[in-house]
Length: 368
Image (cartoon, rainbow, N blue to C red; front, side, top):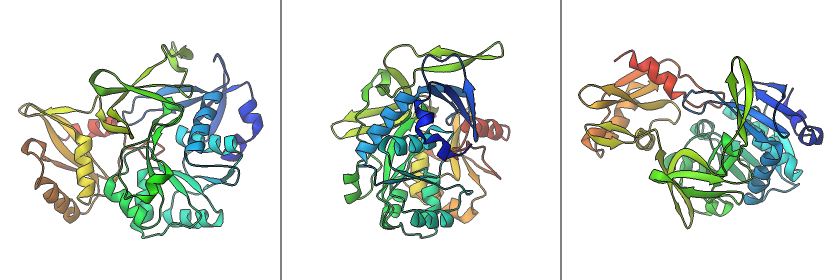
């Protein structure tokens, strides 16, 4: 099966439910309405099977299309795996708007991607930050047809985003998750006239967002997942979601201009009695010159400090790492200093290229 077979009316209008996995679609029984089941592990490595109705996916698609001024003259480009919600979301948007769909079917390569974008006059695109990095690291300029790039699956830091804008890539930061069927908040087209900034993120029309305990974000809307498949005695059974509101693991502040994310509820750690956010340290190291997606800052348990902060990277050049750390250490608090460096040949990653941090942590902890 390929992506084009999922953009036809027969697929969306069918009463059947399907499980989407790596390049494979299988029929699923026992779900209350026509749905798609997505396997996901996020960055935690804990597998889940999220159930989204086809209707909810099209509600999300309509909100994104309206937000980005997509119509039947537009051309969505797909270069994410279609069996993940980010890729399937592109297919749903193409179907909902009756817009074109072009699929980049080759193994990811920035130069080949640029040729594909030009040949197919792609207007709208979804990418992850690593793909953006690959495009601009080669100094490639965006084609004139491209109107908007939704960047998800991770933070597109300010320095990288501005470099992309300088080369004509119309990048827009976004926040979303599988449970939401794609995006929850996304920069609008007006942001392209301003210097790039990762936040604030305007909330899409299909969502209500509120702050719960500890500024933990809660979402409600018709695009929300309606249940999960849970493994019971060797069989996957459907379990409905309880309640209208869904509490995410993300914390943030909701303002007049949109959403500002601060951290994940499970990401803060204690170092010498002080709360530290490794994600913010990674942002600072990106600004100091380390390439996005090629490193991680892990908090490793330590008997004296509670945790020690370890920089783990994929075979980066030693002078590059040394220079970035020197820049970072000039301004960081003493307790937030990097206290170890570990080199690995390859990170464990999801199909979208996300670093599976818990698997990486288990591997690194053995060395300390």
